[in-house]
Length: 151
Image (cartoon, rainbow, N blue to C red; front, side, top):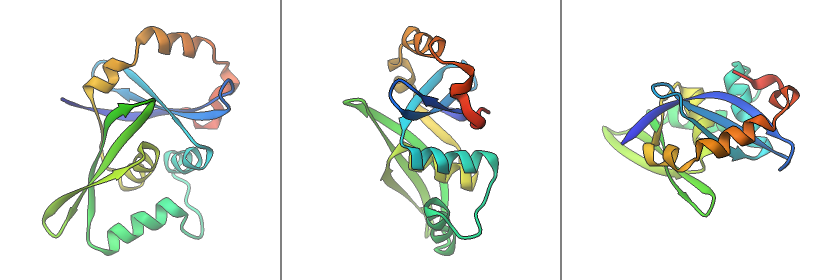
């Protein structure tokens, strides 16, 4: 079963020197952290803040290409977790057909935010994340770890 999630934060994990996008399921308030790279965190942060550059950045370019091809992002779905790596698909409507494209979750999320497309997660992925593990991790964070992208 798919559950809709929203981006609820973008934090820096000082222990692993990487960023984490925090997805939250609205209905049950479940949280799903996904570790991402700095460039993807920047792209997501800019989209969350509604900041646009004078020239298109990579995700803006992809969004523009999709638009010029008269396609539309229907949704983004995080589909699987294998060997600590999340997988996702971008679902597009193109020529009256639905097309699913494999993508890294961070790129899919950045595009979904730019095009106001819903983000879904298979409920099994949310259940795989132990609440205790997440709570322990969150308790270890300091307020300054949240940076300017807290939502």
